[in-house]
Amino acid sequence: EKTANQFHEDVKALGCLEPTHEPRATEHIDGMVKIIQQLLDNGNAYVATGGEGREVLFAVGSMADYGKLSGRKLEDQQAGARIAVEAHKRNAGDFVLWKESAADQPGWHGAFKEKGVEAPIYGRPGWHIECSAMSNAFLGETFDIHGGGLDLIFPHHENEIAQSRCAHGTDVMANVWMHNGFLQVEGKKMSKSDGNFVTIHELLHTDKFGGRKWPGEVLRLAMLMTHYREPIDFSVRRLEEAENILKRWSNLVDCFYSFIPESEGDDIIEYYENKDLERTEPEGLEAYFDEVADDLNFSRVVSRIQSDITSINTGFQGIPISRGDRLRLVHKTRRCAVKVINSLGFDLKKERRLFDEQFRKIDQRLTFLASKNFAEADRIRDELLTQGIQLKDGKDPVTGERVTTWEVKR
Image (cartoon, rainbow, N blue to C red; front, side, top):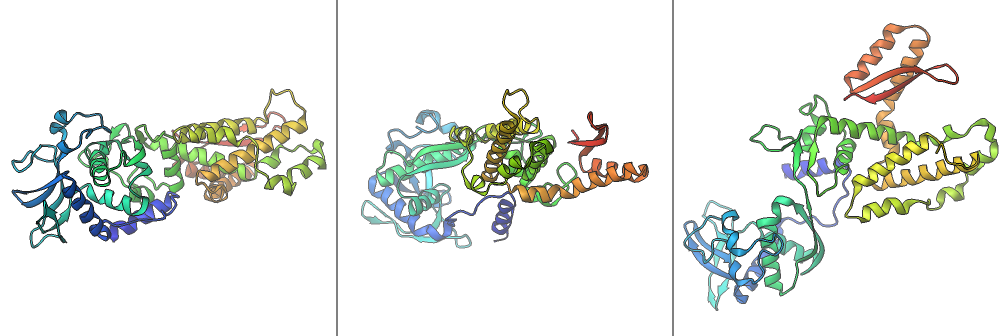
């Protein structure tokens, strides 16, 4: 319960939606026993006695195309199997469906029969069978998408496919398999042995990584910035980059009014505030969703948003159109970007509040500079620098007024 509760808190902080169903394996023991019995009846499984008691084993040799997902031939798989080669197995790759439990171990009653002979085993399920039972209970014998890490392709997913297909007599278990890349930390694979293991909870609540806590929104964006099939490199620089992007995105909430010069008059203001226009689906969303449709390529969506924001900030300079049309283009592009950012699970108004304190300090520092209170101005500058925000002072080329820009310190 402790682990499950922390998991729920962590993924909520990352902005993940709650699943419709979140089954627990212990609630589906009967379903596992039923599938195992079907495999025994079909000749795809057998009962044997090993060094730790009786087991029901899946016979990989009974499935003609076993290994299709990983592309491994049966004779090549023995070395990679996690199951030790034991005398009671017909094939070294045969895997456990049900294993006998000792009196002091968790267990359930498995009322099995092999060739009509009762073979009851008080035991517990093997590594793979729970997935077949729970997916069958909620999604059916076949379903559309199955996900997981690259390291699960063999043997876990291969064995899921074998037991599900052989039990149900289907050609596939899932129509599409989507495997995510390995997680790396500062360019090295995350592992406890290397001392670079860090959890979501630690990132959210401790200073273990980069000497500071990281908001869930930053962690979410840092992951979306890499295509899910590629290795995800978690680094301080990557998180700083994601935070910088979020700060840039947060300005979209109220930025577009700054593009309306007084010379344009009330007609442009009225155009922007047209309520019917705000309720319509903004044009230009197709380009964003084409990227999503290409194997969930959110990394390219993020890049497109960044490019469009640059165009917004420059007012689409260089495009030979009237000033009014230029402002309309800024507005349309901004609305598209905001809608897409929201669809990625980011609440821009929340992001704006998240960084408001830092923006307030930047404005406060300008006030101190104007009153020549350089000691306080330097204090704020140094304080923001400790938070990873580096300020740069300059002058507006038109008005000559002091302006301050910021960037995340690398």
